[in-house]
Length: 376
Image 1 (cartoon, rainbow, N blue to C red):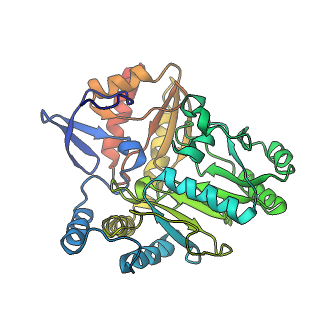
Image 2 (image 1 turned 90 degrees about the horizontal axis):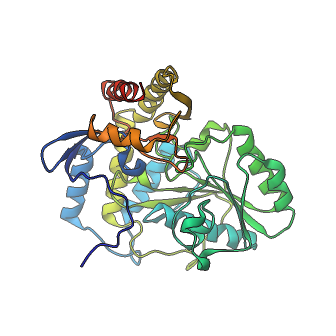
């Protein structure tokens, strides 16, 4: 049997990893500045993370949500403490797309309206509702197309209000910082404007923090750069589990739960929660959120000095670099010659940097040296 061929693969087989380093099956070392799509937050095979999961595996790996699972409550308590939203409610699932599906559903339940708004450059997942709100027609199948789901210009509050006035829109979803869209950072005024318009017209504001959460931007969630903003729903995954599949939905206190409203088989299982708690403990103990902010600011300033770079965007260790040429050949040479992994974006000239938050400056500096040589 063959695999269904849907991924363009880097011709490398990774067999071992530690921190921001990778090793292939030939023993060649690589530098990971992409973190497997922003998944690796605290670093590959962090010893505390590995121990937490092994200890949990020795006790119990899984039971369904038909019984009490104390580690879920322990995770929720720690998450509320670190993210600064202790009054929110937590629903645990398995992935970012699943988190967004449940957020869309909950917004529609609460508002009583079927329509949703997303924005140009958006990526919210590949499942039915999430992909209908993703700005990429190539991955939206005919069965996913929904007339009451609209993708509007990024940053245009006037257009948002015009559509909200139709009275059919139950939710607005936006990424804290767009990832696949090329690290597009929403203006805090735009986010606050969306919040005000949602309240005015009875819609729910959903912040997709799947890629931008868990300290990556120098705040726990990227939307927290818009001081005082309180979304109705916050979705998360990726760095949440540092490689173990876990997703979640933070739900503001105004929402009332009822049995059967949401559900999941594997979400919030014992192993997933153990991985999640380990991530939070390492983020806190090693002050990785501040480290991401400090290293990111330094790296962005250095990148700005490269003549062939047209623009640099981002916060913390979530960085988009627009080149004066297509990025594919540059990324390819970074791997083949310099043994450095980076990411792509929907814009062909953009390189995405999403390294583990444990990365060191000397590692980032090696990237600077490499890309300067390639571009020159």
